[in-house]
Image 1 (tube, one colour):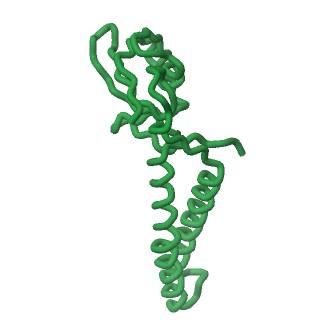
Image 2 (image 1 turned 60 degrees about the horizontal axis):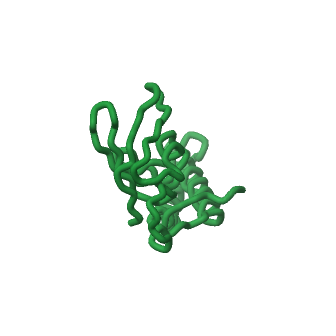
Length: 158
């Protein structure tokens, strides 16, 4: 499996979710299965089947998180010398050249992305168009609505 780029925050978030799934959610599901078994015939026991389905989802997510963490390439943006270039983990201020609107995005791993919080995935069209560019440059980003021109106002390493 390839290395998965991830920020320190993203890795910590996954570790917390893994801890919750293993130490809190898994025991609850095991108890729910045990309780459902007490109702008798398992073939027609909806509680038992629901608990087993939850167990499958939980165990699948645990395996997924463990694989991601095992293959994570954790990048600490604070360890990188600021040089004005857009890189993974950087926070970028952009100005839309048509409507003059200013946007601020942080480039993060795919699992960390949350557009509502201005966290964009490294594999998103905007991030791909910004990587390697410098403050002051004008970039053209291909979006589903067509090409959009932005000027990079500021690059920060937070």
